[in-house]
Image 1 (cartoon, rainbow, N blue to C red):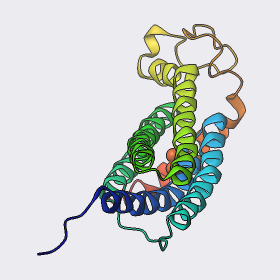
Image 2: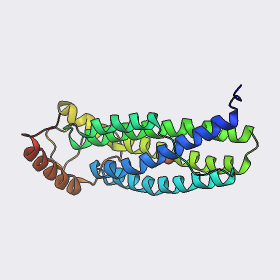
Image 3: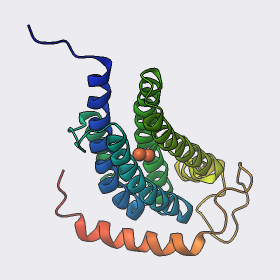
Image 4: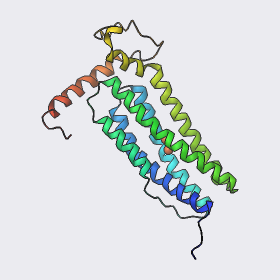
Length: 216
Ligand SMILES: [Fe+2]
Ligand SMILES: [Fe+2]
């Protein structure tokens, strides 16, 4: 009779899953950074891309600490989340709505990672793999910090700006960029008129050229 798998086997399986998931994220983040209009959001995506590359390397350290070969196993969960994010990026949203949608996608990624690393840390600790647990916990903390940063960006202006665009009658009308008077959240979203105008113009041009040959 075949031997039954143990928690250690399940742990290795989850590690391989996480390794593949992080690699998928390193491919998705540059596209998300490119699609972002808010400079703060773009910077956050770029910073997390660097961090994610470090997480891939850190997982390699975890494999080494366990005396295992580095191996990935296709992570269907992350693939699905990234696929959904891609669909959102293909929508013709206005700039701030696109930023809000990018944050929504990115937070799904972070929460998925938080769940995965939370489990990995707990299992590693339970089995006495202290070095692996410490390394995995560093990544868990980075994912949590990224999630918090995204919340801060969303609630610090991006959501409200998107909401004002959705319901202009409640706010300052048709967007005279020089007089953003009726903002409901304090401080968020100010001082980015120039960059936004440029990006809007670029997007409008892109939309026009692409309108006859849309893929969907
Ligand atoms: Fe990650
Ligand atoms: Fe992450």
